[in-house]
Image (cartoon, rainbow, N blue to C red; front, side):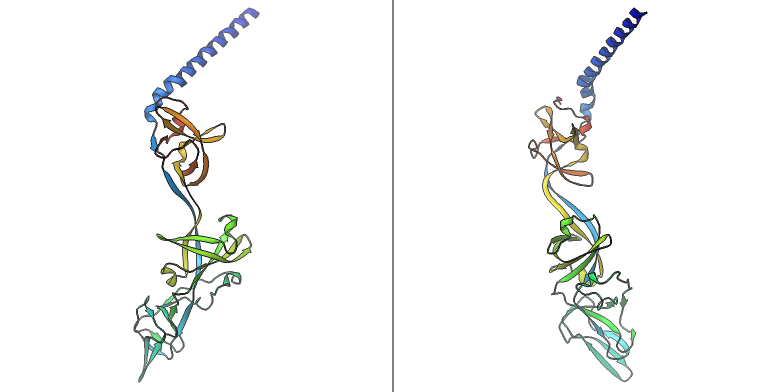
Length: 303
């Protein structure tokens, strides 16, 4: 009985050894032969990786509300969005038997909509306003009936800085961004602008931040609430898809093609954006082929 057990044990070891050899041969020779045609290559190229966070802001600007001197029918003389000088007659109000000119008391850009926040939002109001009411802007056009003292248009000074007020949820921006005098880079459409943090106020799970902009898109003269992109990180490096990064002993690396063999190069992941990551490493050279689908690659494999 003991001899039978020994024989079974020896036979089992032999079978296991045979399978191990077959597996090694398949892995070393057959697997590369099968998978080589399916390996995808791309060229290493240095690109700028930009990480952005989209936030909503309230626009605070220097604007003057102009009211009618008398009740009557409104007749605008200036198109909305036009820049006018001080004392320019922007509209005329006609009442029975007479007409009243409505001049602008300041120089700036005329807009025919009033949202009720022109005299509420001021620089620094981010610290005192818990919530900002949402009013539907009231617009005026030719032939509208107005009452005496009714606000009909506003004049925005487009030559002075504007302020943006943000409520930033915890963890959305890096901590160093939430400090006075910190510089932010903002994206509006295709344009980018720089602003400086002038006020920071932590408040119940979020941080109220006020930013000053000396240059800004013209839309900010009109809109009260805007959406903008805050650039949190920008760096130059090799940008590859996540599928190109392979782990060996817990370290990330990228397979490149050196002559006719694959070489695994250890890398450092500098950042990520969507399905791409930015990597750096001594073995990476611009223009060198790398493996996109790294799970099919092996270090030292001949291609």
